[in-house]
Length: 524
Image (cartoon, rainbow, N blue to C red; front, side, top):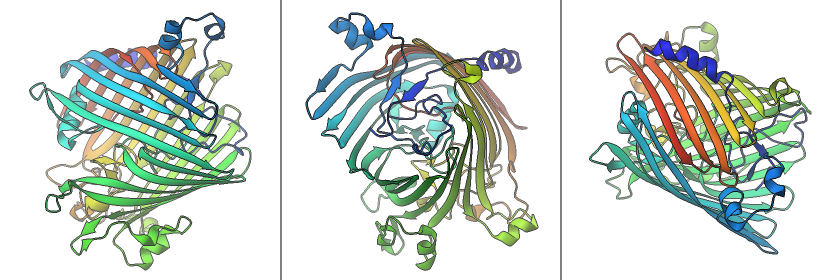
C-alpha cells in the first residue's frame, strides 16, 4: 500500500511550495524555513551559520496589501500584532498565538492539537531588545510521534508531558524568552531560555534547535570579517532523577565556542568546540566549572589539563557561495578518535565523528521565491555518547545535534515557493540506520553508555538491526497575518520505517489554523 501513494506524493512534492521569509537585519526571529536565508555571493558582512533568534522575519507581500485603505479590524487581523506600541525610545508588541489542528492518522486514527500561545516583545532604546513566548498545549499525535513521546517522556522539541484524555493524548506547556543587549558596535550579550543552531543547512551536526529549550548566556563579538561566540548553558538529564538531592532532574553544563571567519566574498570557515560536564558526581556537587569561564580559551587543552572526565567535541563549518543565490555547505564533528586506528581501517569504536554536505539555492531557475535545499548527514556509531548520560551530548532525552542521534546516514531535500500569500512546501527524507537489537548497544542511541558497546572493532554506520526510513510531506498554507505567521495550513505526510523484523506505514492528513514561528522537527 505504501508504494502506491509514496511515488505520486514524491512527484508532487518535488515541485511544491512553502513559507519564504526574508531577513531585514542580522540583529533584533528564528529560522523558520529554508527560504529565510537568502544566498549571497558576498559573505563578508553576514554570518549565516548562526541563526540569530532576535531577527524579526518579514514576508514579501504584494504592494497592494500595504497601500489600500485599511480599517482597524483589517489591520489587526491581517497586518499587525494585536497590540503594538511605538514610543520615542521604546517599542512593544503582543499577540495571541493559536495552533489548532485536526487530522487523521492511519495508525492513531483522529489526531488533534489545541495550543494557546502568547508572544510579547519589543525594544528599549536602541540597544536592548526582548521577546517572550508561552504555550499551553493538549494534543493527540500521529502514531510514531505518540510512540516516541511515551518512550522518551517528551514531546519532540517541547518538553515533558502528562496524561490527558484518559491517557490517549498529551498535556504539556513550555515557554521561551530572549534578552539581547547590543554593547556598542562590536558586542552583543544574550540571556535566554530558548534554542540555538549552528550551520547553513536544514540539520546541524554541531548544535541544532531540535531539542527542548535550555537557559544560556551568550556573548557575540564582531570584529571585521570575524564573528566569535561563547555560550554557557545548562541542560537536563532525565535518565537519572535527582530524587536524593530533592532538586528534580539531574543537571549538566555546557560551554561552546564558535569562530566564524568570512575569508572572502564567497568562502566562510567556522571553528567549533564544546565541552559538556555533569553538575554532580559521586564525589559531590561540582556545579559550574570555573575552568571554562574564560570566553576565549581553547576548551580541549583545558579539559585535558585538569584530567577531567568531561565530554569534549570539536567541529568545522564550511560554506562556499558560487553565485548570488546558491550555497554549498558542509560540517564535520569530531567527538573522539585515534589517528592510527582511523588509518588502520579496523572500525575502532571510539573513532566517533560525523559530517554533512549540502547545497541550497534561492530563486531557482530565476523564479522569485522558489527555493531548494538538498543535503546528506551521517554519524558513526557511538558519536555524541559517553560513559553516562550525565555528560553525553543530549538534553531532555533528545540529541543536541541531529535528531537521529548516531549510527545513521540521511538524505533530505526541501523545496518551497511563495506566491503572494500562498505558500507551498515539499520535503523528502530518506535515512538508513542501525537499531539496537537483543539488548545490544550498536551505537544509535546516544543515551546508552558506550561502555555497553557491541564490539571494540569492526564498527560501521548502519550496524545492528538495519532499518530504513522514508518520510514524505507536502504542505499548503495561506497567510493571514505576517507579523506572527497566522495561516490556514493543510499537510499530508507519508511515512514508512522498516527492517527485517517489522514494517510501520503511516499516512497522516492535518488541517488547521496555525501561528508563531516555532521550528518543530517531526521528520525522524
